[in-house]
Structure formats: structure tokens, C-alpha cells
Image 1 (cartoon, rainbow, N blue to C red):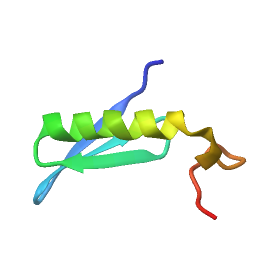
Image 2: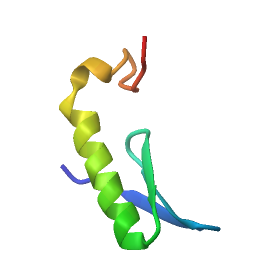
Image 3: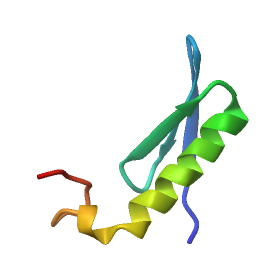
Length: 60
């Protein structure tokens, strides 16, 4: 599966966001933000019980 990431510079680091699903992360460097986003995406897709009817994460 191929996903697209958007990485933006913030005052104290970088924010990474997946454009296809509602998952984001951050890091002090571009590399760290990218690695953290990859880890967040693995967790997002690993536990389908966290997905709501529209495919968005939710908590009860």
C-alpha cells in the first residue's frame, strides 16, 4: 500500500500527516517526523477495532 505524507515545519519541529487517512505525528527532524508517522500508521491499520463506521479512529 502506498500512502502520501505531508510534512510541514513548525516552530519547534515538524508535523507529518498522512493525506489518505486521518493520521498525523511530529518530530524534531524531518526524519523523526517521518519515522513517527510510519509507526502511527502501522498502529492505525493494525487494530481495526479502533475504526468507526466511516473508517476514522474513535474511542468509547
